[in-house]
Each structure stands twice: as structure tokens, then as C-alpha cells.
Image (cartoon, rainbow, N blue to C red):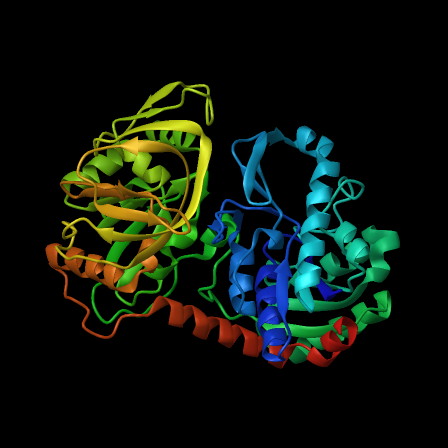
Length: 499
């Protein structure tokens, strides 16, 4: 049976996911077989495993840190919000159904069985499991029905480390208040970590000592604020801090990603953000869109609702103005569907509209169906890509979408991994193109060629320095973060309560 430790937080966005990733790497470096686990995740940023299952993107990144392939057992339940009142429930990597909150609470016992099954599978395969909680364990209205925080800690007999974010303010109140609200479960928390600290540590230390005096629980580490790390974030909260402050050697290419209400898989654009001659911004401001060199319509968990919202707030007009101005308009997944002529929803999968008119910048006709496509893919261009007049033969990515889009003149020949199935994908028309391939910009040569071709057409200097190798960049950043965790956290304490 595996040993385990659990990282919980005083709320969402305090750094649980990244701390779990670092611990996965640290235990791997000790020569142990280690895996991440999060029983229930709520995120629109997801990943497709090699067997075609859908899990939270954060757990996929943690698995990479552990040096193992992501698996559905690392995140047996994924909730993807579809609207104000409900979520799509992904169970063991596959769509179960759409549920309201009350329906999901009634489903709790079945969901818990999936959690137990996943835990048992992992605990038989690995020596150490690093568990991540969700939100706060002290939500007093949910304590009797949650299956992701203290319920998991009790079942797995895992010691808990509680993380607080000092950058949000009120960190001592958050840590102390969590302990007091937990009552009978408070004994499971063995230590505190304070994250994202700026300034003189000596000023903080008296507070740490007083917190330990009041709770009997030590602060075993204060992690510095390292800014944007470039590691995959779990949810849209990260977009609030997505615009990096960079010093450009030449005029940057302006790329705007539409910040849709139901934006999904926004990690598709992280590689663009870290290019040295690109200024990337998430926005729905008219002025940002019409002045952009590239506008990207990203994936959406509710394509029709997001398309309707774009029309209501005047973004359709902005997109067509940008198009006339010569900007390259790109649609990925749901964005590709929006760019076409029509989106049909005969089964009411996303809305009560049986059909919605698209932006009509491409010729595709999309029909949403009941079956969700989730697969890893490899692709090659069908001839030279008209956007940059080059061929590419080893494109890697994945698909997560409802429905099929029929259009002429495909851009890519796609082959699904682990399936004997190939087909064409995408379309180009004037300066507009779209595809279902998530992760397409993670392909270094293709990404750089697209950037250079647009820079040239817009009269901007071509950046001649060596461009980033994105996988190497992520690995270097993960290692930098891991070293910070080793330096600023009492790892001897972690080992003692885990192993």
C-alpha cells in the first residue's frame, strides 16, 4: 500500500497544484515511484490521456513532474461547468451526464465509489501518492457531503499540509480560521505553508510563531513569489495575471485571445505567451481586438452561449473589423466551430437553440452530437500551410469536442493515436483558419513559422534569435520551482510524516 501526503489550501488559487507538482518531482528524484491524485476537480482546462480519457490539466502536469504517463485514476472525477446551474460530469475519463448541483450531491455515493476505485488502483502501483485537495476544506455547508478534502484525508490516512496565499491578504486569519472551522478534523493538519511571499522574511516570522502558539501547528515553509512560472494553470483565475511584463528587443506581435465566459483549455496559448517577440493578452475589449495582429477564438465548454455573448457585446463587429484590417483570425476547437456558417444542436447538448448562425468567416457547418471526441492525435499538413507556406509532418496535439464540422479543403491530415482512424481537419480562407487540434502551438517549428509569417506581412522585424523549445522551457521552469520548494520548505519534516 502506498504512503501518502495531502496538500490542501485555504481557498482556490493558493498554489496547491504547483506544490504537488514540485513534491512529485522531489520524491521522484529520491528514486521513489510517485503519482499525483485529485479525487474531484472542477476545471475547464483538461487533458486527454493516451487511452482517451479526460482529466484535469493540473494532474497531467503533476504526472509529467513525476515522470509517468497521466492516467484517469489520477483524477477520477472532473466537473466542467456548462452554465450557471450545472456541470458536465466526467467519470473515470468519460462523460457520465450533465448535472445540477443538487443532482450531483444525490450522485455522491456513486462518485465516491469511483474515487475509492481510482485510489486503490494507484496505491497498488506506486510507492508514494501526493494528494491535492480542492478549494477550502472549511466550507461548512459542504463538510458532510464533500469527497475531495477531509473525506479523502480520513480514508487514505494521509497527513495534511495546509497552504495559504499571503499575496491575497489575510493569510494568518485564513489559516487560523480554517483550523477552527474544521473542528474534529483539525488534528489531521500537521503543518502550514505560506505561499507567494514578497519582502523581508524577518517581518513575517513573529506571525508564524504566534500562529503555531495558537494552533500547535508549525509553519514549515514560506515560499517566495516567483511571478508567472509558465506551468499549466488549472482554471481561469490564472488569466487575471496572464499578461507578462517583458522587455522586447523589437516591436512585439500583438496576439489577443478572446476571454470567453466558458473558455476551456487556455493552456493552448502558453507557448505563445513566452515567445520573446509576442505580446499576448486575454481580452474582450473592442480596441484590443481591432488593433491585434492575430486574434484567437479559443475552445469553449458552451460554444453557442459564448457565440451569443460575443454578438451581444459587439465582439462580432470587432472581429470582422480586425479581419478587414488584415489580422489573422484563428479558431481552435469551439472557436473553429464559431467561425463557420452554422452550428446545429439537434439534441440540445449546449442550449435550447436547435441552430445558431456562425460568424461565417469560414464555410464549416457543425453538428453537435451526443458523443464526445477525446483522443490524442498526430497530424501532418495537407500540402503547404497557406498561412506560412510551409509543410509540417510531425504535429502533436489532442482533441476534446462535441460534434463534427464539415468543410472543404482541409488543412491537416489527422491520425488518432491507438486508433486506426485518419481524417482531414481544419480550413483556411483569406486570413482566417481553424482546427480542432488543441496544443497545436506547442509545436515549436509551426508556432515560430506562423509568428514570423505574420510579422513579415505586418511589416515587423523578424526575430532572429533562437526561439524557445517549449518542452525544454517547461522542464527548466518546473526544476526552478522545485528547487525553490526544496530551499524554502522543511523537506525533512515532509519526509518524516510521509514515509
